[in-house]
Length: 110
Length: 112
Image 1 (tube, rainbow over the protein chains, first blue to last red):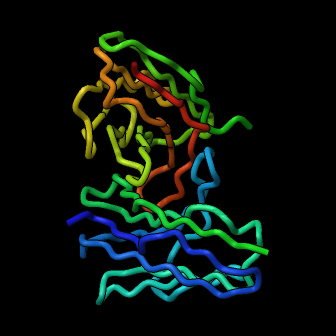
Image 2: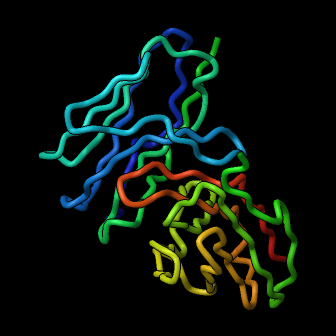
């Protein structure tokens, strides 16, 4: 079993739609969680951290469910510019390794 | 503020050749990482350095060596390149556990 698994993509949605991604992780001792965004042929960049209480940044909401070992990302009112690959990241065993999911591709169409 | 700088950006090698990928960060971060990214596989950790003077294997270390030259620099060496090492390589740094990672722009390596 992979340490971090994400929803298979791609997701194709119209502008203005709400879309949600899930990500499951296997290490129950994981302590930190992130969503990164990666544009085509570019480096990943932090979108947002995921806190135990959940957090919101504009149109983006991240949630953590420790009991079921998954994190989620909700994007409201999708924009064309949201088209990218979204990477789920979990702090793996040992405390200093970050483990990336394979990513979910999102296409937002006009 | 350059952040994380990788060189070269592109490289073509013949099977059996060696090369070193360079990475430098100017954010005074303690931890540095090397990842490879293949289509459909996401980023896989090759090696990491939690702090200056230490290095540890990640998920896919075979065929690679690393050197944490000083706090700023972390290099990745391919001693005898193989076609299976064709990939995009990313270097990253961060202050420590639980913090954001910053990535370089990547090195696109092709082994023929």
